[in-house]
Image 1: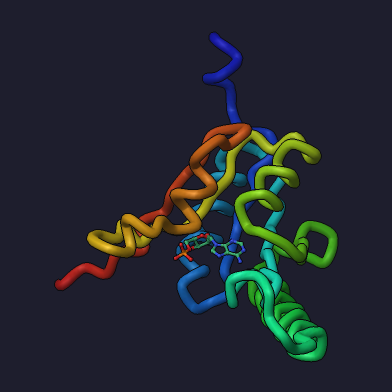
Image 2 (image 1 turned 90 degrees about the vertical axis):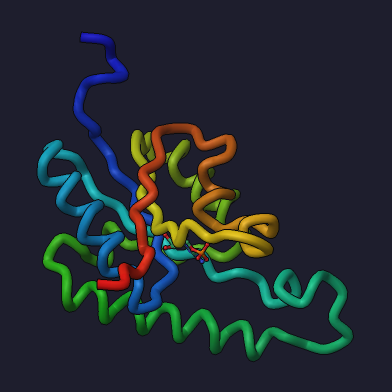
Length: 152
Ligand code: AMP
């Protein structure tokens, strides 16, 4: 069998820590179990200056720290809920999501990245989404879990 068709060994799930991350974690942990793979979770806290588009004439360090603490609390709540998650396999990074997720996947030899996808249209599609961003230039397979709401 070609090596690309063997089972996954290390699955990385990237989460935004909103209530929408449940189906993404669920799919990633089910895949990890089915493949007998290691599971890692990552969340990236984006620099505030980046969100404001670069130069901001004020000190954002306190706000940034609050953002980081809030992310840490949310991550701890997930660890309490999911028995597959622990402080050892959950990682909080600071930076740009695409860059940090790719960097982690390379460093830790992940062979599948799992993200959520809204399958957006129109302007949002032109602006791109994190799932789209992660897919481009990914160092391994990427699974985009559909987060589209159905009407029924
Ligand atoms: P979005 O494009 O922001 O709607 O997010 C789509 C998916 O990208 C989410 O379901 C997560 O899997 C991933 N994602 C978004 N933001 C982050 C983040 N800050 N850290 C890690 N993954 C993220």
